[in-house]
Length: 330
Image (cartoon, rainbow, N blue to C red; front, side, top):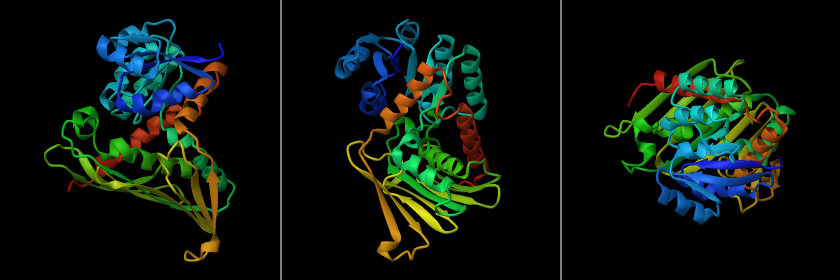
């Protein structure tokens, strides 16, 4: 087998507009099927994206012999059910973030995939973008000294009451939807789990979901991550990585455009107001979703570990739970 044959479990917008076309562009991937809850919608989606097979139920796609792996962009509350069913059908799984609704669910999903001998990865695509690969390399080699702090912000505006991101039963809310990125970034950069969590959450009284959340994560040795995420603020994102002798900043940290150059800014022992103190590193345009698909598929083809182990997704979920549990509600 030279290419992984993918099935797409749902016609969710992120899959249709971003991830599925990106998988199709990966040289070691082939999208052979897509499923929806109804034949007409599945057929329309297949025609739109040029996918050979359309299935009117998720069960029928999982039963298809021509599918090796599935991508799951379903609402958060459906991740556990369909990851476990995919594992039972012998399919490898790339599942959207956050992996589950709870640590218990995430552990059950990981166990099901391990017992079935299939691979499972959480789809944090940003980790595979060259800007992040280089930033982590620079940090690990000591370019900015010892890591002291990570400061990040992620926000967009969405007050639609029927949108799944605003429904607690679907796993909505700022922390689950985008705060999981802030958490993941901090854990990845420190290479450790927080030993202390403090958070403050503001909820929408009618919808019951958090719409503005801030947290402090304290890591072994005293390093700290501070972040804010919001689903009721201007579209904005930033990450500042600060060390003892320098810092790294991102032009667009989480969803850089796939058709434009991107940049990171590295300052070492520099005056913050001096332009010549900062090195700008430019990266060619790349689709991080394609890179993610290529790396996952290669792990399947070579029977090697996936780029990010599923233990990382479980650990991220544990911090999400900790933030939601320790926060005073405003």
